[in-house]
Image 1 (cartoon, rainbow, N blue to C red):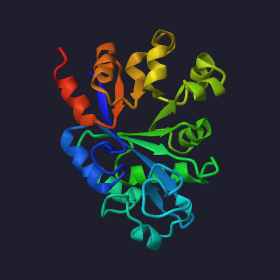
Image 2: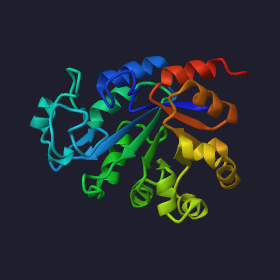
Image 3: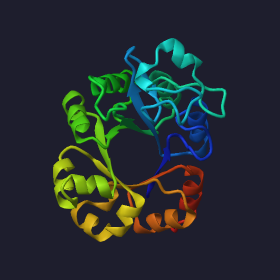
Length: 247
């Protein structure tokens, strides 16, 4: 059965990467929750997608410049909630037995890895007893290598789209590079659909993830294909459609 992952909680329903959004997404019955982590210069692991504050908050500038004080004063747009720390998010998600976590380790505004972030994120997951329920994820192969080195017991997932695969030398080269590093390959839905036969000739569909699939017809399509994982901004819709699939 296809696992349904709530993207940034459920970003089309509630503010993305927010504590209220995560709490609400849990009530939907998602199989996993996906979210993003940056590291500030003050040493906090914070859950937010972009390396800049501008799109999703009432502030501007790089996420890494946040101090604990400015973070607490920064609100997500159209909400009265702030940018959460990784610890706060894990406190919400950890008690839900069986829930998976797709924890994406982000790059900074210059496209560079944050020094030591892989070990910091892994340590937080282990401290909350989540190492067996989590996937450490990234587009960046170097980051995934760091994850494998510092936390070999935590599963890993690589994300990519058509342009990213091309920059890695093409599909076969890309999968050859990441194959020993990851358990799941997550591909943008349009690229995955267009190259389904070529991809599934090289990688089992049970270990593929389609992102980000929000339209009912496209969700049904991937469910019918029997893909292993599907990430959606509308996990409520995806879960409802999965429940109507033949056993």
